[in-house]
Amino acid sequence: MSNKGKLFVVGFGPGDFKHITARAVEALQESDFIIGYKTYVELIQDLLTSQTIISTGMTEEVSRAQEAVKQAENGKKVAVISSGDSGVYGMAGLVYEVLIEKGWKEETGVEIEIIPGISAINSCASLIGAPVMHDSCTISLSDHLTPWELIAKRVEAAAQADFVIALYNPRSGRRTRQIVETQKILLKYRSPETPVGLVKSAYRERQHIVMTNLADMLNHEIGMLTTVIIGNSSTFMYDNKMITPRGYQRKYTLSAEKQPLRPHQRLKKEAEPWALDQERGVEESAHAESAVALLTKEPEKKSDSYDVAMEALARVSGKHSQPSIGTVQQPTESIFELAVSPGVANKKFTPDQMMTLAQVTGEKGTMEYTPDHQIVLRIPTSEPQYITERLEKAGFLLSPTGRVVTLKACDFCDGEKAESIPYAEELQRTLGGMEMPKELNIGFNGCGMACYMAVMNDIGIVFRRGKFDLFLGAKPVGRTAHPGQPVAEGMDPEQLVEVITAIVEEYRQNAHPNERLFKYFKRAKQLHGYRYQDIAPKIKIEPAPCED
Ligand code: SAH
Image (cartoon, rainbow, N blue to C red; front, side, top):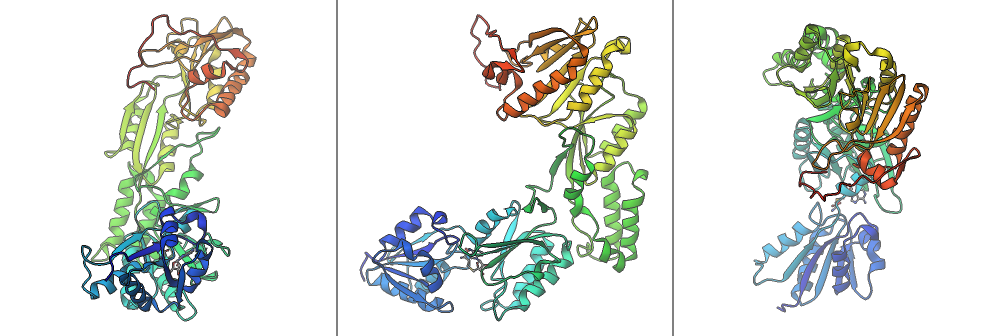
């Protein structure tokens, strides 16, 4: 036996040359023999030069592996090829099995190298969004070598455990029932609306993609070259893409362009998987019906939606000896994060507001008092709109958190210097909550004392003698903190909102992600025509490690 022989087991990826690894190409070109299923050999033919090709039919895997081992033992370099990854329903295992049969050991036996490739679950996922972001599994529906009973059991387990599922070998000319049975099993645990992507011949000439859902998937062509990707209970469809959020403890915040107080529609979709499977749930169980009623009709009786949900779940489950996963979808909660304050100018909480805060936050949420005159709430919930409704009813001003515009007004001497309050309110309405490259605070003070430190904000506005003074580009924190530069004095009040909006818009459109306004101002040298003045300190200050 010659030692020079070598076995490569090569996964060549989905099928185009851009998605094959460099190592796979090297191995193919180094080899004397290429062994594989003929369709696959045809796919990579243009990469080959003088190699001898041994192509066989689809069901001849064992003879392919045996031939490969024999040639390698004769001192040849042999590449056994699989599409995708050779270790995923590919040839790698079979080659090892043949070797083991012969008593092969790594030390003494023929050399083997398995070359990884992009498997269909990855290539197909990449074409339909980001469906495989969370725990996932692949299941082959081919019962050619595996008993159907076992396959069905795995489908059931994966469905129950809420895995994202990639179905390989979903259907062939002869095997047509498997996918029908699989859909039936999945529908026991997942909503009919669960997003499903059908990807045929990914990255090949005849690539074809259909975005559908669990109820509708069988109304489309599914064949041997299709991979079926089924979302988990959190997966949602957005602009014809399937997205699975990264974690179950997802975070939603009030997200907003111009109107931060309309979270309902945006949040509803993602919160959906939490819902009872109403159609079947109601039919099958009186307990389920009362649970639905509890969830949909009486939330205001409870202080915390999570408790309502849990009670509903318990009622439904009560009828069964085991938790009834079949009738109820997973209560996928997320952390809902938002900021509240009593108002733009108002800094006083009422006892009723404090009580509402405590109630909606519940035992599982947190309230954080921030330097921005706001309390940030983080509440695990599946019903963010219920929380926003309660808070709005209590008279709170709600804002999103993070990289958004926050208006920080003073209290206008307890409302005594009220003249400019309408301008502050209009700015809040127009810009409050708008998404930005970086957090953007607008300080708004109602008199020249500016005791709420407007000039220390990204944009500082000070009302004085019926006019506005404007400051731009403060660096509010760090050892190199500095106030904003005075750029306009005595601005006519009627211009204010327009000018600030233009500044914010210019910054939003042109700043780099994460570039705070002072940095942008310095880099751009001007903002809305206001020129940047270099105000570098005379003594050089070393940047501190925590500085942004
Ligand atoms: N080793 C391969 C899988 C072989 S099983 C891999 O890792 O991808 C064959 C099944 O793989 C097909 O029935 C189909 O479900 C899937 N498949 C392989 N290549 C594919 C492609 N380019 N597009 C879509 N599905 C593909």
